[in-house]
Amino acid sequence: MVQQSDLKATDSPIIQMRSVSKFFGTFQALNEVSIDIGLGERVVVCGPSGSGKSTLIRCINQLEKHDSGTISIDGTAIDGSKASLNTVHANVGMVFQQFNLFPHLTVLENLTLGPVRAGRLSKTEANDIAIRYLERVRIPEQADKYPAQLSGGQQQRVAIARSLCMEPNIMLFDEPTSALDPEMINEVLDVMVELAESGMTMICVTHEMGFARRVADKMVFMDHGKIVEMSDKEKFFKAPDSERCREFLQQILPH
Amino acid sequence: MIRILLAGSLCLLIAGCSSDWGWYVVNPATKKGMTNLQFLLSGFYFTVLLSVTAIVISVVLGLLVALPGLSSRKGLRRFNRVYVELVRAVPILVMILWVYYGLPQLLGITITVFWAGVIALALSDSAFEAEIFRAGIQSIDKGQYEASHTVALSYTDTMRFIILPQAIRRILPALGNQLVYMLKMSSLVSVIGMQELTRKANELVVTEYRPLEIYTVLLLEYLVLILIVSAGVRWLERRLQTDQRNR
Image 1 (cartoon, rainbow over the protein chains, first blue to last red):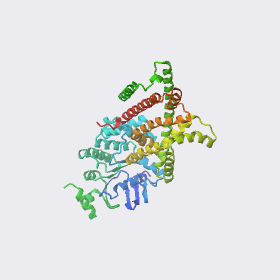
Image 2 (cartoon, chains in turn purple, orange):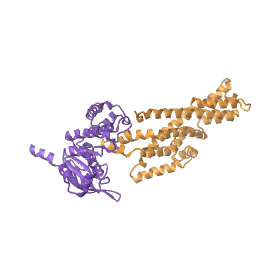
Image 3 (tube, rainbow over the protein chains, first blue to last red):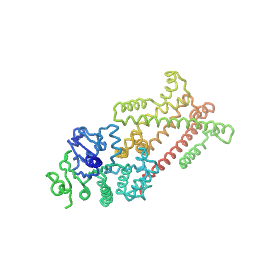
Image 4 (tube, rainbow over the protein chains, first blue to last red):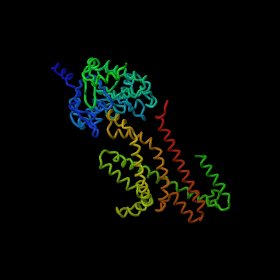
């Protein structure tokens, strides 16, 4: 019995997408996309701009509403209902390219507002947890500063800590290093690698192939709203099936 | 602010030296002048009370009208449009007359001059406040809503803790404008007999026949009031802007 339930927990995917399509007007951003993501799995999504990578992860946490197909998280259908909204709030954290910190709140307030307003934690509990996560992203000393007083890399680490304070099971990263100066990219990637090693389920849209090589369990290449290539990282980097993926990798990998 | 007042006083002093002026009507050194001056100054009470009450109501009303204007539902947006266009089209003086003389007849109620003034000013201003709020809220980056969504904030919490605090900072100069505007427009309520600054001046002119001096005092009264408000708004702006500063 115990074994069976263990089996179920690891085998049934925490995120399941089936033939998901999304249109912006007449532009089809996602075209019949299907993917399963297991608990603890780290997925890196790449592809040219406009290929639907961001839309893919934004549909998972309902920032975009998909037009057809089904998405489920932990068995709950993501359909815009109250139940699906609660599921998203309870399970999914997200980090944006532009950080999207709340500029009028201090770092600590940025971190505690969500958990406190959701009624999950008291103010003091939330503060304790926030400090713990700030330590984990290595900037506890910035707790009382405002976002504008931090560097881009620090801001993005605060954004990661803010998501973690909601204790999510799944973290979505939407090009988290694309808006950063080159010298700040690594401090953010280091935090992400640590997070991956701690067993967090992660879906990362990124072109940082070094990061992908280190942590990815599954590589996804998208083009024109479709998943063109989906394989483990060894195959992906050495011998991808599709010509399009090979070309893309040649262009973005260092010479 | 002190400098502006000094310059103004200096101009008056120079002008006042010519024989055409009769400053005796408001000369605090004489008993009569002092009484007149006190009579004029007593108008501050209702001007301030009326304007402040009206601006508070109009800001709340404006926000309540602005939010439907930002909705994805067409019906709510239409309500916002109709309200703004209708209310904005009514001249304030007409609104005051309509609320004081028309509304009681329509609703079968009696209404005091004070509340007629407050309602008329608040209604008139609310359409402008609504547009200011709409502009302010629309200026907030979409990412702020998305981030709020990812930390499980409800719509109300997102507005209350994230969007409005930022929007209000941005529209503070415009809100300050409206408050100044309100203080000035409150002079119109004198036509229905509100005992505010302008009414007091009008009444004194009737008994003293010294319009130049009395209206000059009136002018200065508004100037002082509005300079105080401006300073207050600027102070508030500075206070709220602390988090935007760079290292």
